Image 1 (cartoon, rainbow, N blue to C red):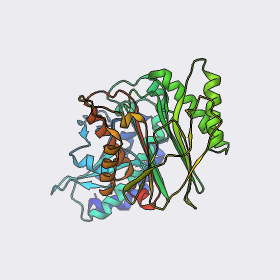
Image 2: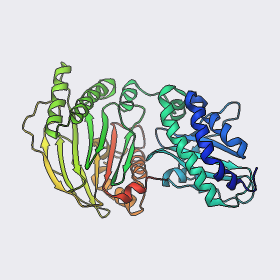
Image 3: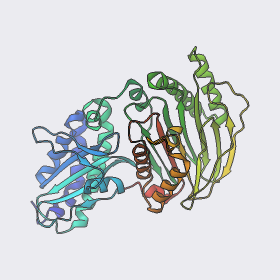
Image 4: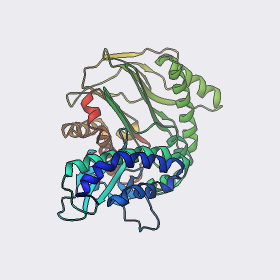
Length: 407
């Protein structure tokens, strides 16, 4: 080791990053953790990768044989969980050696989990160590995402129980749960994540335009999943052909009517925002109205742009319009959120959703953490397995919102 752990880490990290990229080029997904420590070990640094489960309740270590696998950690009430929730590094606060640091593991703005970095001696320059570790762990986040499709090991780490075919189908059609750019951020969450069949979301950012949608197919299970996948594919293909909201909805109508002999329909909200002008255009196909939040408070529902659910051949479509202000947020949700009932028959409702959202915004939480807490509140309210899919999408039009999703 050099004079101090932090000095050697910070000096060697650029070369180590290049070496790691070279080492993992032909690595299997299950070999990623070992390859990381093959680079960091000689520097007196050990890295343990933890991935968050689909429920976003626990952080599960990626196995690295022959090392013993540590136990999972709760997102609630742990330093590791705090690093995940706030997307900020957290040292343990313990004195002496080894020195332990928890860092959020992200790919862009997508929260994947955390990394535990243990240095065999206390750093003389803690800030330099944190900066160097953030660079390395940032690369590891990208590598986890890149390697995940090529094997099942990393998928297994994130699963606490079997996933239904309908959920498997939709999970692999969806974009990452969070995306941020210089002018805004969009986040989503789905429950129940292992049995979701009919809910989905999508987004795309191109030039000044931000496109985002939420959809909910009638029914449950694989049948609903196929219905939702058909509508989502039609909507996405039409948008990528540079057609507008009207054409997208009509394409979904045609796909559903043409593909299925029985009646299949999908509710949803399709929206597009010009981030240069603030002009929002939206279409609501039989879905709960989105909530507009301004300066941290819900100001109104967007009640325009109504048409029948997609799949019911409604050509009388009037696109709604709204002018947004910088800093505004849009919260979209499926009826599984507000129609969740507790054992006494008390409905979760829009008022409770608004109150909890405003509290999260007042705490300046990152968008994905806001949705995690909202989804958790819905599940706790039901005190049992959800009766319907519950999906939330939060779009935030501000650089500050985007920055809150970054380590």
